[in-house]
Image (cartoon, rainbow, N blue to C red):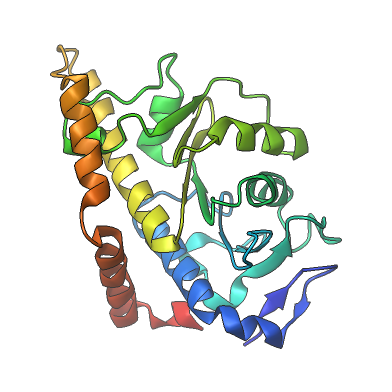
Length: 256
């Protein structure tokens, strides 16, 4: 087993990364579950997690490995303040540009999950990409989603910087013509948000497909429900603990 580091140059084995064992394990679990839930896009898309106090050093998946095969030891350690030498080899160019900008510019975005999941991307493809408050899951995100309507090509350097400005202080970025990005204080929190956001988008898209009028909650009720979700005790942590337990039973190799 090797633990990879790219801080300050090319990927290399790094025993110093043993300190990030739990963080690596949590990220690997998030990848495995994203694959199980069909929220992957082959070898594209990336999850990252800050491991330094200032958020500049972060773990991220290597270029070319499928979400369903991700292991704790696969994660690369990058420095958002220093461009790695081996972009295009072990480091995906868009991974560096988007996630590097997020961790460099938004220290509160400790965990950053970016996918082109089916229903969120459908909603991102509509002229009006807002999520209507029509059930408890959609109301969870009321007032908490930033909508980007300025897509300007694939996520290279200028686009990465622009996306970090679009997100601001929101936990969800609906990336028009692109997909979705979710940020949180931990992998558990961010993955829980991603899971329920995709569920919410599925409900909204399928409701729209009926062609019938939507039963939208009032702004007051939607805001109240969103706040209740935020106050629900340890929901994300308990959810993610169960996901880890299932993987331990069925795919224990993710911890390698």
